[in-house]
Length: 166
Image: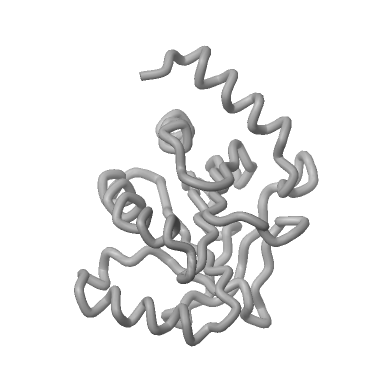
């Protein structure tokens, strides 16, 4: 287990290299419709720590992380935390097929909000689409980006979430 100073140093270093981040001082914006057709806005989630997981159905690493993501999200039920999936799939049909298959084997109530970046009404604060997936962004309860991770989700991502929770 990393010490608090090591974790703090890692978060500082990661923030220095945040090439995808929104304008400094501005809350991260994410809005669109979920796959269930419900409106979603990060602004409406103020008061919660958010983990935004950018992924694609053709990314094997992304798919392999889904069980871990959902298990950790379930572990924080009752806490002000929300996992949000953002699909970077080129075709919405690919995402819908994956979602249908997942729901046929799992409890749909455990499904976190899922958005497709290709929807006409989709908006987020990334300056450019992630070039490597998965890409994870951790937002504090005020919507400010506190960390981002490209590639596999390291333990530090979950540490960042835990440190932001009351």
